[in-house]
Image (cartoon, rainbow, N blue to C red; front, side):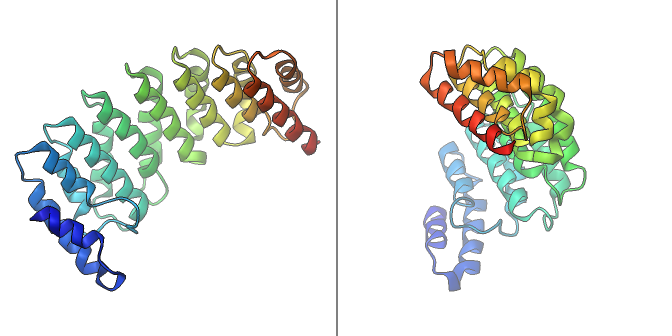
Length: 270
């Protein structure tokens, strides 16, 4: 019954949007009491996604309650729902402190899928409008990017730091360490991309790391490093020389193409 109510709410016309959202929330409350994990998961998923402008009243509380679910897929869905709710309506979220605490706790979950979801959610929730959220999120994500035992979590944490932008300026040293030292190429690439997303000042600070990444064993990391160095306004002689060397000798055509684009961007900025 609750699934039919949620589906009807999702397909309702705009004039019935508020009423339909309320029905979906009520249906989810019923669904979350189910003994079947797949039904609890479906109950959460009907509350967020494309077409929804923001969380309905009561949705954050439902997500917070589901963070303690015994099924890891349900917990991961609750984490994603909470991050989405915070990003859409952080200023008006009455449970914003509890939401952040819940996401930070989920970053220590025993299942890596939940920790990965929590890292992504913190990249959404730790933004202006939630006092103290950015600094708390940056600290937790920096630790996860450096030290989580599962590479998908480390990659997600590095990516989340990139999405925080200027709010994550204090994490640059962590990102440099990850870009240089992590054993998985996806994590190294996420760290380089995160440095790139923080702008020219961060790239300039991490220039040596980005230049070293031009020699990474993964062509994907080398492409990201070239893209980052191409954003340096005016460039530096060292970076330009490294990009020119990559253009001449990298064995992967995609990395050579990235180096060529970066050199073109540097040349236009001169």
